[in-house]
Length: 65
Image (cartoon, rainbow, N blue to C red):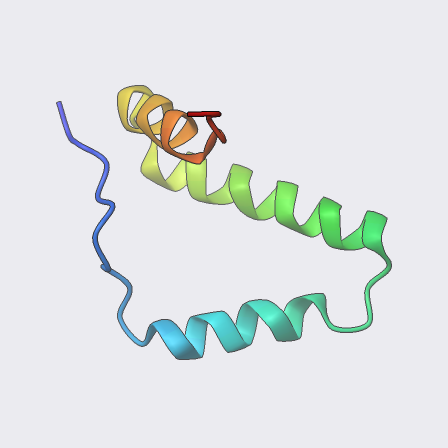
């Protein structure tokens, strides 16, 4: 079983972030939300491991503590 990586692990992270912002530039909120949903599904498919995806969901859910 693979574990979710939560430490910095993106090569050229600033370039990726700039590209992500550029992809959203000029989009209406609904279109931006749809882009995010498609990106999540593409990346989830790439990961392909349901255990890792479950860990990612747990990590992303805001918890009141």
